[in-house]
Image (cartoon, rainbow over all chains, first blue to last red; front, top):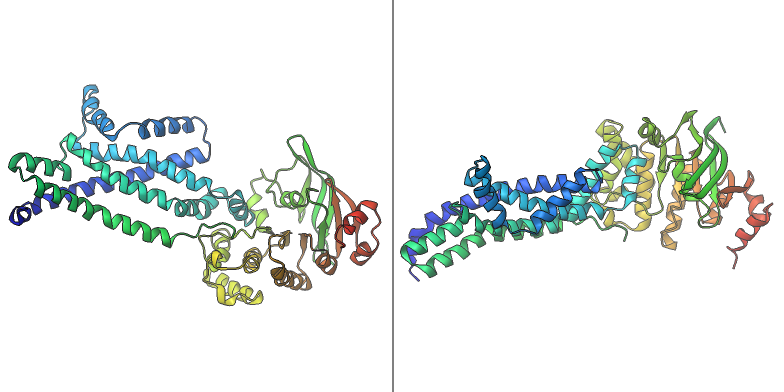
Length: 219
Length: 246
């Protein structure tokens, strides 16, 4: 292993890390909002919309991100819709993640006993107030493990971004190997940089999990 | 005892085709403590739940201060604020501290001043012996403590009437006492209450009036609890009371 080579590659990997993490977090934020919307629609059994949500969730959970990205990047332009690789990556991750987040949040919503909202209502709270102050926070806290697992999973999925020519970590590594054939150095750096991005998420995730574990009903 | 506070007339409740409550009539006066007893499945809990519109009703009406309480009415939230309820399973909000549980509705629903509500909450917590637990989460409390917090959470709304639905049924025996003491103190201070319970000694001690409910009907009603427990007038009440003897 050549330390000088590693040091000379560091700035490139750093660039790639920032790009990967940037798109990753935007995609995850989108996924969370989309997932929350879908979970609420499913939970409230909103007619019609509920059907769309079910189709969406199954469609995106049961196809690879790679295929979804190819659709956004190569198929949409054929019908006149052009989007940049960055937007494409964000959207792809958001759509895939939304389907997973919807499931995690839905199970959180379902875990809340009916008596919780009845207690809130008996205190004079309206449906909206009950949802905002009771149902949503409780559902979020019991969904934390699922959400954290999804975040880690989605950040790893960013490795397919290289296929739509985004200069992410994977792309950078492949590119450098192709040019200079320093395979071991490049792959080692790749592993290290993924860890730099993901380890804090896992650690932070378990901290948050411990912090919000109030949702033990009964005793 | 003053004027009529709660008036229930010809109350009918069905779940699908199953009739739960048949033509129930009851008037509760201000300051009165009415205790409802009866075998499991007789409709006691459903009866209480109809009174603050957690259940819709299929006939009759519930009037509080002459105003109807209905699940589909636009003023249902305002009416529920006047009717405090405590449930069997002390349903505190698990993500909020004791204080958070108590302050939520006064602040968000009644839009009261935080300082004023906090002062009152501290005072009430002191009265139920939980002044030092204000920052604990529900999971850190015992069943009896949780139930006392639930009572404070209902009281701070300044309800005109308190509905207690088997509030000691889920508690360990040694915790029943501490909760019932709190309720007895409320009764002594003239709080209007409608209580469903299986604690016969408690019912006898606290009731101004006893209702014996069976199969959704008031089978016996007595304004003299002592007489009722010693010499019930109906055979069904007699049989029910006998089931508590050993």
